[in-house]
Amino acid sequence: MNESPGNYLNQELNWLEYNQRFLDEARDPSVPLLERLRFLAISSLQLDEFFMVRVAALKALADRDCRTADLSGLTPAQQLAALCGRTRRMTGDQYECFTGL
Image (cartoon, rainbow, N blue to C red; front, side):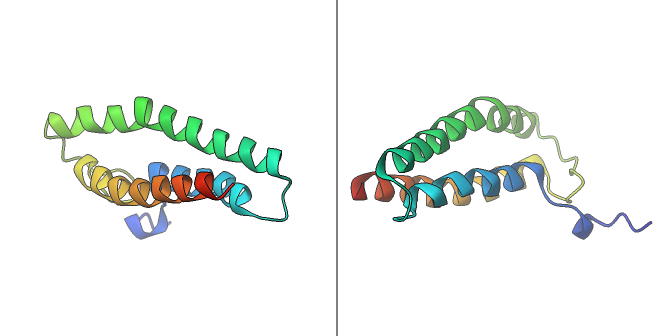
């Protein structure tokens, strides 16, 4: 069995992609308006919880200078950097979606 980091997805980045599905539904004009608003709210609430729990745990590890990589091969600091860029795009999309409703 080949266990190289390229064979695994990062759990946190994968979770953001899962949350993106709710935002995609909120941006879909074929979905009724109230449902779109509901999907946007779900996306926002889940992102808040994600930061309170998962990002906080990664930040604590990075602050302790933990350099242990996860199964995907990323250290806590590398994960935080990747999450920062991805969540900036996602929150921008959320604001754009909200103003367009």
